[in-house]
Length: 81
Image (cartoon, rainbow, N blue to C red; front, side, top):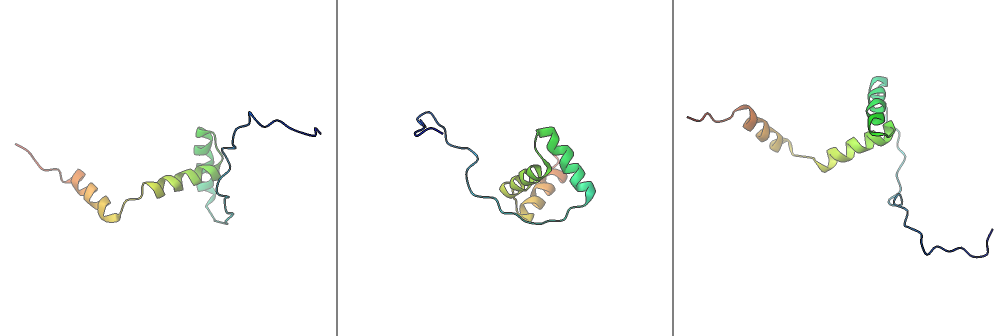
């Protein structure tokens, strides 16, 4: 080991942030298989892929009322002419 190290050209670790919390959740085998297959398509494991899906759902959350309005607008378009 060296007595001193030069860290002048080091870069911050992009993976350091809030620590993740371990939880236990039960998924059906077919869901795990699907998560694994879809995760492989983007180059991540099934747990990371599930986290990505949940984060996206959280960030894009829309109230039920807004969803119904959007659906009604798409289904019941006003007739013109």
